[in-house]
Length: 454
Image (tube, rainbow, N blue to C red; front, side):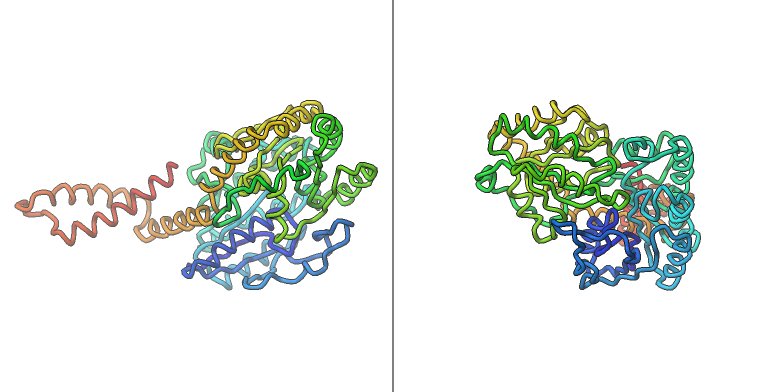
């Protein structure tokens, strides 16, 4: 199967680049897959930075082992044309889009953003099977919390963009609440419910001897400055220290590309606090130790835009979580059976109480860690990618069988034939080999219907 994956991709620092890397890595391991990544061009925007805010220039080199074509550019109206031209040249079986609504442009460039979101429908028009993994839907986004102005105009624009995205052959979302919204509001018939998944193929159980020794580390990691903010957390931390004197706050990550300088401003305001470490960007090989030595992962967000990557990494390494009480996170915890302690969003006192409460109870830490690790084992990246490939294969089989009406006709015909084959004396009964073929085709149709209703 020849697949084109349209996404931001390392060394780009844009949204979903890390997630795309892990999807691509799993696809590369399958000998049946011929993968080409259609990625964003490496411009002069912010790359990953070290602890001093200096660019990691080595990150500009392409990752080895991947076939990457950088054929589109952020905030560029020509990107749809270049993408479609490249797709026509490659002629893939599947074009898989890894998207948020701001993948192709910032809200300050709404025309470029909308044009990019039209590409899945246009690629389908060229005869390609197109699938969109949509990491958020804007009906569930707090625009004010995310720093978006002109709320009403963006709501109208986002509804139009959603309808355009739904013109792809299939769309998967990662939260059940998103699926319900698309089914109820848009009457969509091509929505699949997936899971974000954890990045490891085989997660290793947590080593509790590395935690609280000597510090109880509270880890906050992300792209900071929009709805992911640190003010409430640094306000809450002194109260945590009063109850847990060996607590240490570790802030990792980088600025959101629309908020340059935010991370550094928080770091500079806390220079006098020896119990807060600002790590900046963390290299991939250092992630296991960062999570593995943390007692808690905290998500001090004002709002959310989908299923959380840091939350799934916390599960991968078996770490308890404390999160803002946001509907998306409530849905994520219920859908994937995560152990999360929720605090009232924006309430520093409640955040401090929840953090200290977990740190003060080793029994509670272990229970939450084991529950999260159990969730991780059920949603490894190989399992996630396997489901996508099965969806693509079932869609291909459906196309091979013909249109929906032809499938329904075949389904009725095959039932009649299978029923008649139960009596060998019937003059029109199917022979044993013929019945076996019918059963195989019938299973294909049934599997597609099950997938479609899941």
